[in-house]
Figure 1: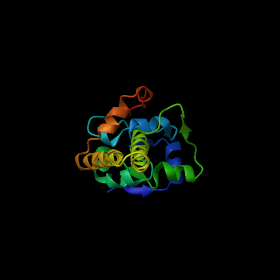
Figure 2: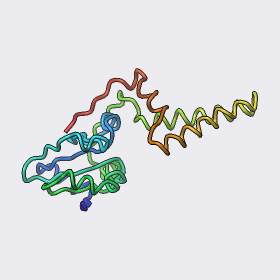
Figure 3: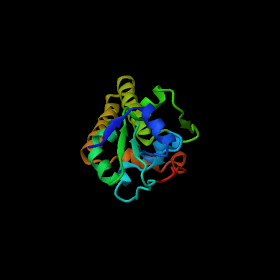
Figure 4: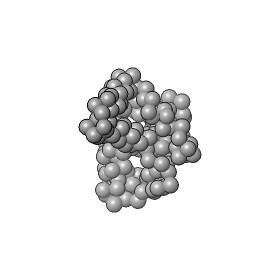
Length: 177
């Protein structure tokens, strides 16, 4: 199991040559990241090689620390022979500690936030139209709810797939490890 370290300790190790790995998805990394962090999304953990300087530790982080903690065994396996740590509290703790972050507001919101905004808006719209125009509009809210249940049960989200094809989501590319 990987040990956790504070954001301040991670910053110190980073300045000493450690490799910082962001396990969030590329769209999240592109919008906001710790300077010098390499992108290695959990979804691509098996496909991408970890390039770490010999003798230097590897530090893993996500937004809040939940993804790294929940995948600690997989990350430890990926780290292999290198000393590895999880940054406790992730990017949120890093910012709270007053450490620098790079933000690119030209990048679109993270895809899951877009899904939450779109789905929530459709549910509210269905309720408002159901009350004001016709009860048939409640079906829109029901349809969105069923879609969210399906997405949670199968790991496949049609709305996310649709939003991913939108023009504002096409350019993206976070630096890979």
